[in-house]
Length: 121
Image (cartoon, helix red, strand yellow):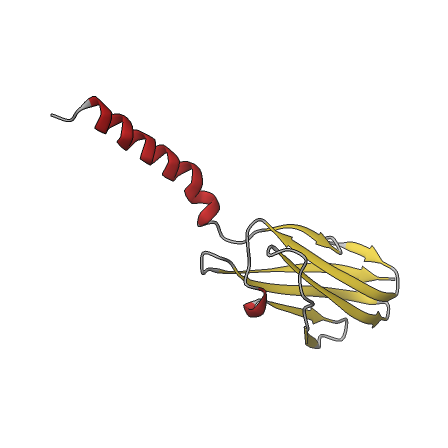
């Protein structure tokens, strides 16, 4: 028969595991972006800032820009202020519809991808 102390210790261990496991093993999910999805921005230099819900490996993460002509270019990311962000600056963009494509490697080892369509007026 199990002692009361062992049962309580076991339940406490399970509860702590449930509370902390989702944060430790969560895929990186985009929580905020500049530009925002479907935003309209003015012509000129564009600062791109993507914030995720967990740490990402910036060195193994990628940003691409698809332009109105369909051409895709890889963007060089700048050093991040935070381990959950990707940032870059894009030189002058003429008017048209664009898509930022992102791919990040999360701290749990999983890759997540997404797109941020926007328009330059």
